[in-house]
Structures are given as C-alpha cells and as structure tokens.
Image (cartoon, rainbow, N blue to C red; front, side):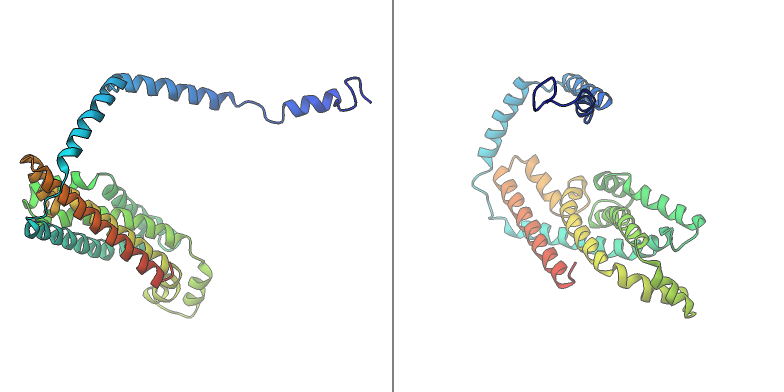
Length: 272
C-alpha cells in the first residue's frame, strides 16, 4: 500500500501519466490565431447578424416568387438544355483525347524529367482558373455561342483529368512494364499491355465524373455568353421572370440527377 492509499500510483508513474498527452501549445495558438482572423475577416466583410437576418427575409420573398414554376416555354427550355448537354459531351471527349497523351508525358515513372515538367506545367495552367473565367476569355476570342463553352470546359477537363490520370499511372506496378519491355515490345505496346490494364477502371471513373462536372459547368458558362441553358437562365433573371427561372432550375436539377444515375451505371458496368 502506498502513501496515497491502495489505488495511488508512485510519483514517477503519476508524473508519466500526466505527461502521456502533453498539451500542444502550437496547435492551440494556431486555432486561436484562426479564430481571431475569422472575427477580423467577418468584420471587414460586414458579415453581421443583422445583415444575415435581413438576407434571410429577402431570400424568403424571392423564393416565394419562384413558385409555381412556368413550363409553358418548354421549347426554349429544351433547346437550352440540349445545347448544354452537347457542350458537356463534346468538351469531355476533347478533354479525354488531350489528357491521355499529356498524362503519359507527365508520369515520372515512365518519362524523363525534361518531358514531365512541361506537361505538368500545362496541367497546372489549365487548373489555375475557374471555367467561368476561361469562358469569358474564349467569348472575347471566338465570340458568343457554344464554341466558347466547349473550349472553356475542354481546358478545365485537361487540367482535372490530366492530374488524376497522371497520379493513377504513377501508382501502377512496374513489374508488368518491365516484363513487357523485356519482350522487346515498343513503347506503345508497353502502354497498351502494361499500363492501360492497370488504370483502365480508374480512368473510366475519372471520365464519368468529369462528364458529370462538365454538365454542371455548362449551365454556368452560359451566363457569360458561352452557350447552353445558362444564357436562358440569365435572361430570365434580367426580365424578373422568376417562375420561368424556377422551371429552368428544376430542369437543371433533374438533368444533373440523371447524369448521376448514368455515372453510377457506368461505374457498375466497368466495376469501378
């Protein structure tokens, strides 16, 4: 029995128990600094409870003006949605076609450094800007219409798919690559028989996800004049035609849900 009672611990054991989880003062200081900066940033942006409450009141009035939705102009709605779907499909196809060779060139386990770094810089450049910003640039370059949207989403697809495909290629097992190379096969045969079988399932998942993302983004780039349903939505907002806005929003949601179902089916088919 120790001096502190039958359940008391020796002094050395008690001290070790107290120090088993020592306080992380650096982490606490970081959290405190984050809290201080959050309060400062909210004050600078005039994010106040009164303004938030007023925003909720205005938002409730706006939502009340959206219903019931107006589907009488279904022909205009259908035309915009079909154009958005076409933009998404064409941009995804072009993005895949450009991303495949670019991801091979950027893979450090297959290519030399003098080739991987320029390829990676191209992908970084394509990911540096939001698709809407890129769409504005292409609208200035090629004019209003679907072509600007296709080019903008193609750039976004190259940046996203290129990065994911490069990472997938760099994670493959090199044993198959070395075995095919040992047989004297050329480089393209090495890619087809040693690289593609290891990453094909992941590639299908990446392409399905990017197509779904392009379908969503195609509704945004139209707001800046790059074709699709976004232009129709923006025009309806300008006319204060809120019941038609609601119809457009509901149609966009339905289309995105349909794309999600198709993506799940594709992944199930290829067992991704």
